[in-house]
Image (cartoon, rainbow, N blue to C red):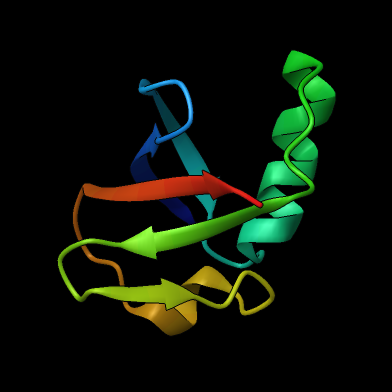
Length: 78
């Protein structure tokens, strides 16, 4: 399986979204697919890892982040 469980906290409206992303795809690609499913726009966002205190590159495949457990990430609208 190539799934990674991620909880996203959208800072603009303080809502949470839990989903399984494909680790072979980037955040941008996964959010594009998610947007098609739930009819939402995820184009102008940045993703922040509060544990590492860094913004993540949305264009890298998730497997490069070496996420091995359920993780919480913050999503900011830009």
